[in-house]
Each structure stands twice: as C-alpha cells, then as structure tokens.
Amino acid sequence: MRYQISGIHIDVGDALQTHVKAELNGAIRKYAERPTDAQIIFSKSGHEFVCDAIIHLSTGLTAQAKASKSEIYAAFEACAEKLEKQLRRYKRKLKGHNKDRNQSVEFIDLPSYTDVKKEVLKDSRVSSEAIIVAETDKEFPIFSVKKAAEELEKSKLPFLLFKNEKKEGVNILFRREDGNMGWVEPS
View 1: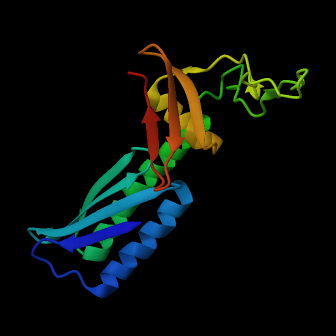
View 2: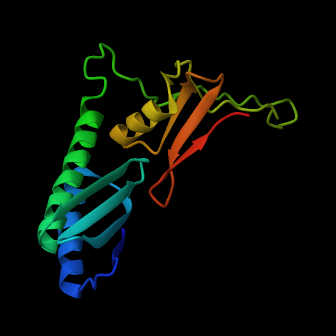
View 3: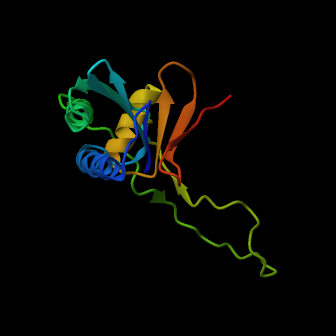
C-alpha cells in the first residue's frame, strides 16, 4: 500500500508519519482486504490542526474523512475514527448484502465432463472432430456491475460470469494481478 503523508505549511516529522502508517494499517487490515493507496494531508486553520484523509480500495470504494483539533495527533485520531467507521460499514454491507435471499447465488464449480470415445477408423486414424471437454447448462446470475463486484469480493473466486441487468450479454468480472478488478463487456 502506498502512503502519501504531507502537510500544507506544516512540517510532518518522521514520528507523525510512523504513527499515521501504524494506525491506518491496523484499521485497514481489520476492515479492508486490498487497499491501494492512502493520502493524508495535514494543515492549519486558525489555531486548529486539520487532518484530511482519503483511502482508495481496489473494489472502487473511496473512504474520505476530515477532522480538526487543537493538537495534530488528536486531529489525526479523530480522522482515523471516521475512516474506520466508513470501512466498518462497508464491510458490514458486503457481509449483510442479500442476507434475506432465499436462494444463494449458484457458482459453477465443477464442469460436467462428457465421455470421449475414440473411434478408430479402418486405416487406424483418429477422427478429427472437435472434442467437447466440458459443458454446462447453468443459468448466469443477473447483476449490475456494482453488485457483481460485491459478489466477487465476497466469494474469493478468481472471476465471475454474469448477465448485466442493463445491457444484453454475458459479462466477466475478474481479479487482476495488481489486486484490482477487471471487467469484460461485450461490444
């Protein structure tokens, strides 16, 4: 995770940077799985210190908070509490999403394999027809892209095939190597 800790007309020392990284790591590890970057800016407004923080998650969520106190550490602590509350609510939403659903989303785990019979021709050559390795007649779930991303986040699968509720056709949502999600949509 990348941190950008800076100050506007304030010198942000090593002790404050270490404190900020340690506190944010604890909150982010507890509530978010793949954060990408965090930007924390300290400034002074009158006699108070202002802490403005933005955290980007790989799921597309941006948690943002701002707090001001008379001491710089207290301003950061108040800001961190607000960020942690947003992340906690987001995680609760992911866990509780569709909890009242009667049917769970059906993911295709194991394909049904067909029997492959090699028919040997009279002159000992194998047939050159294409062999069907796997086939299924499962229906794809119908989601918006946002709901599909939430389902993929909950399921820990490498990809999710779904029908887009706004557009015709099957879409693919997949996990990229950098931790973000990719989306393939038919044109």
